[in-house]
Length: 244
Image 1 (tube, rainbow, N blue to C red):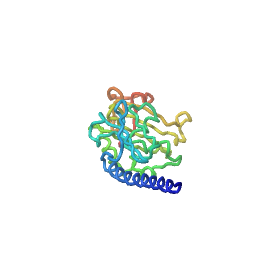
Image 2 (image 1 turned 90 degrees about the vertical axis):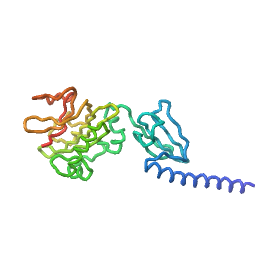
Image 3 (image 1 turned 30 degrees about the vertical axis):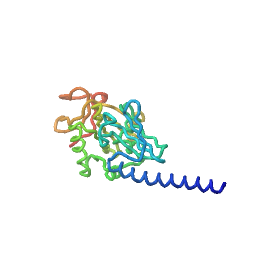
């Protein structure tokens, strides 16, 4: 009798595992193609911002844009993994940690880059490298999305006069209509120690600013200045890079 019970238990477990593999494969294909998983139990959070689909050994987490009843493809972010997977998206960004919890930035944490990160690495990583024609369409791509009020992200990399790399991550958050910027100056050997930091800032707008014969890409609050600016007042005006 005991052997029969063991065989039955093993058989049931094998069926469950096999069912889990099959349903995971089916739902994995659906999710990767932008479709809602079917072989799951759907649970919506109390505030309606998050939907979790529980499957056999796996789950799909979806953050909605407006309402759980809207089309599945309108989600702000979706991820599939095991039952123990952690996946969080922030609704508001107020820090470096928040910055890298969005759909566009979650796999691009600036803090994960090598200390020896170079412009050559940046070109390979599809960054907007100043002074190079490689990936120069990234600027126009970001601007186009920004003008259409769509989420956008770009990593801008430029070298100082001495050849050290400065990295600036620029994110447009369409939900809150804000521009968020993280600047990594830790590789600038000629900067003072207190300036070799990874700093987060947010602004109301982003635009091209003409100063003299030079075009600058800037983020700012209020209105663009007509003449000289106080570059130390980076809380209201920040030069991302020169475009010329």
